[in-house]
Length: 336
Image 1 (cartoon, one colour):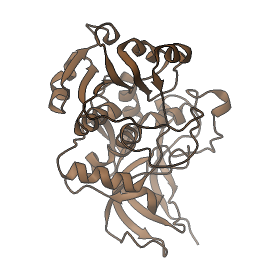
Image 2 (cartoon, helix red, strand yellow; image 1 turned 135 degrees about the vertical axis):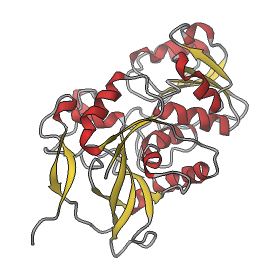
Image 3 (cartoon, rainbow, N blue to C red; image 1 turned 180 degrees about the horizontal axis):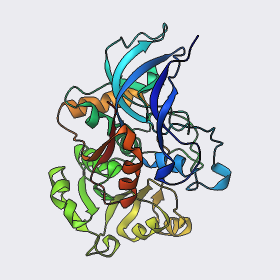
C-alpha cells in the first residue's frame, strides 16, 4: 500500500527559524479514539520554538528525546476528515479546534495539512470565529483557564511538589504582566469575567486594546516599572515569567498569590517570609475546557486577537516575527 503524503513543516536539525522546511511528509494514520483533522490554520506558541531549538529552554534533565524529522505545533482549527470507529461525538465535516497531545513534545505535529488528535482533546470550533481566530485560542486560552479557573486534571505537577490551585477572583485585584500577549490577553478577560479588578502591564501601544478587553488600570512598563507602583494586589499572573518574576512579590498583600507562567522563579524563601503563595502548572490538552471556552467566545464574553498570519510555507517568517516580541494576541499559520 502506498503512503499518502501531505505538505508539512518539518525540522531535520535543531536551530533557528531557517531549519523549518516546507516539504512532503507522510499523512498521519488514524488510530482508535482519534479523529483526522484537515487543518485550516495552526496557532504558534512558545513550545514550538522550544522544540525547534532542541529544548534548550528546559533544564537538561527535563529535555525529552525528539525523533527527527519532527513536525512542530499543537494548536489547530480545521475540519474532521475521518473518525475512528470508536469515536461517537464527532462526524465527518465537523469544524473543530484542538491543542493536540500537549505536553507530549514532538508528537503533536500541527504545522501540516492533516493531523490526528485524540477525540477527548477536540471541541467543536466556536461558530463566531473563523479558522484563523480559532487556531489562535487553544494553548493560550487553556493556559489562562487552567491557571485561573480550573486545572482540569489530576496529573502530578512536574514544576512543583503540590498541585496548582486557582484562587477566588471575585472582588480581588489582579495584575497581569505581559497582558497583550497570547496568554495575557485571555488572562485579563477571564479575570474580569470572574469579577476581578484587573491591572494590565504592557507597552503603551497596547493600552487601548487592553482597556477594550476590560482592563481597569494600565501600566506602561516602558515608562514605569510595575513593581514600583503596584501595591496591595491579591494576585499577579506573570505571563512572561523567568528569573525576574520575583520582583512582583513586593506588590502583593500577605496571603496573596503569584502565578508565573514560565520557568525561572527562584525567590522561594522570600515568598515564604512575605506570606505569598507561588504556584505554577503545565497546561494540558482538554477538549471539554475548549468547549467551555468556545461557549464564552460565541457569547462574545471572550475575544481573541490576531497579531499576524502567514502561509504555512512561511513558518520560518512567523517564527522570526515571534522572536521580535511585542506581540498583540497570537501569530497564526494559514493552511491552504
